[in-house]
Image (cartoon, rainbow over all chains, first blue to last red; front, side, top):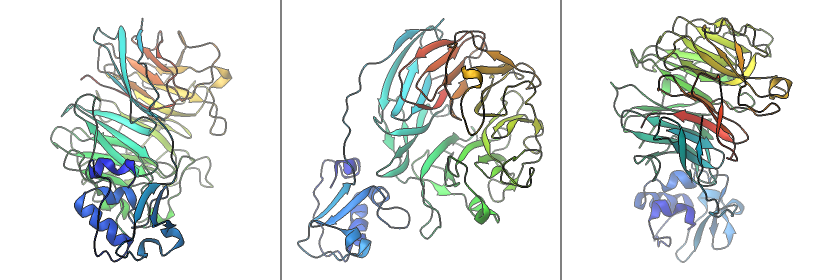
Length: 99
Length: 354
């Protein structure tokens, strides 16, 4: 699971889910365990957010059955932002006087 | 204290010596666009409209003046099956003292959300969502954003909202029903120049000293309402342009108003290549250019939330530009000082006494 979701999962970023029907079920189970995570992965129509990718093993669910893609025991599911980059590099505060 | 919502995070400027010197912190939410940052004086809490393009729009709060932030449990979202999807939060408005824990949020598309638990969870205002004309609403250039929310301090059941490019709506029953209040507002881009709705308000503010008076910067002019937003009067007068985004009212002087005109909706540049704030001392009947301390040659623009006044006496005026300058005047625009330069594009400026 991507770091952008760690605010909701705490330090744990690897989760094991058993007996999920499909990807939507996986996300619902995640949300039950870590409330708030669903709203950051899916939109209000339960579709994957535009800049989020969900992979089953190494296949993007957009190329499979979307959120209805079946999840089997042993599958590895990745939730990742679709672009990466950016690093804390800004520093230095302003101090100034105004007349 | 001045909070800036910028394209790359929140900055907080504080002064402990009567606004003579300033110290800043930030950016908080590094790299993330903050459409609006505001302060709830009831709980001394900062709220931020966080536009994270990956995980979607959300609202966060800070109880320690910006040192730490926490997102609410449930961000504003339209109901499952809705024809709308939440794109951005444009404005956060704390309600009045009599409604502790109540806040409002305006979104693009034009949803109004209410929180009754201090911003932890949000629910959609069904009255506006089911307004009978909603299927015919159209967005402006910036989207169909609900960007201004005014709660009447005398009766919180009375509220005004402004939506681009839908117009002004008012409720008197706590949001159960909404009626258009666009009388006398020009919509020069429409076949009918004075339609019931379809105008493009850019920002509205209430006069804190005279609550029945509401000022509006519109796509097609500057306006004042003297009857609590029932009707509007144009106050363009000697201004160089009808077009602009921000409008601010002096906290202590009930007749003093500020705007930052731009040439037109097509150019969005200051007239004659010089950025100026214009001020009125007579409720918009006449205006004066206020350029002392501003660069002689400058192409700054100011977004709709980019100007605010503080509660000090005399009231300070703050202007943040789309190119990252923060200007301040302690004397009603007679002279401007640059607090900071080189900031990210400034989307919102909110002054408050912490």
